[in-house]
Length: 146
Ligand SMILES: [Zn+2]
Image 1 (cartoon, rainbow, N blue to C red):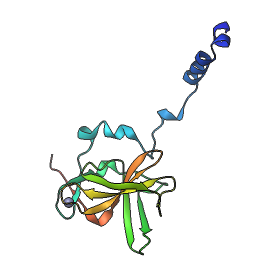
Image 2 (image 1 turned 180 degrees about the vertical axis):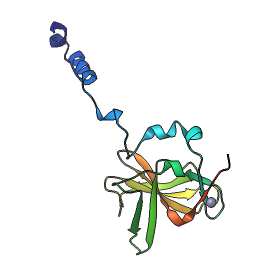
Image 3 (image 1 turned 90 degrees about the horizontal axis):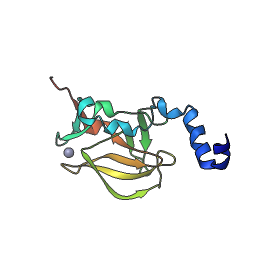
Image 4 (image 1 turned 135 degrees about the vertical axis):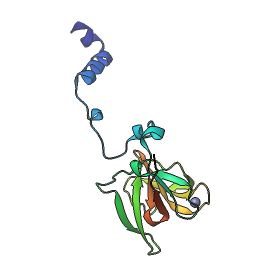
């Protein structure tokens, strides 16, 4: 006890270790761990509707604001059906992050293009974490036989 009184930092560490945290629980939000099992866990490929190159995986789907799939209007009045993914290795984010008309409060967006054919596939969002919002009808799911 004397040690803790004279070492406030140490006392803080001990307190943290003894307190259950939310970090141990599964999270339906942003989960960076998902990247680590990339090759093992992800099998169901979603490819670009235009060029058929890999965009992301079915297993990478996640929920934002408690929904996986969202319908949005852009400022021009176009409707997009957008699905959220933790990763999208087949895309490239272009432009500067912007919070103009952002669809997810607290997140800034960049346009996400297909790496292979440069088609606009959706948006890359960054804030307290990162995720992709991809336009559903620009992706095709491919079942792998294995
Ligand atoms: Zn493409």
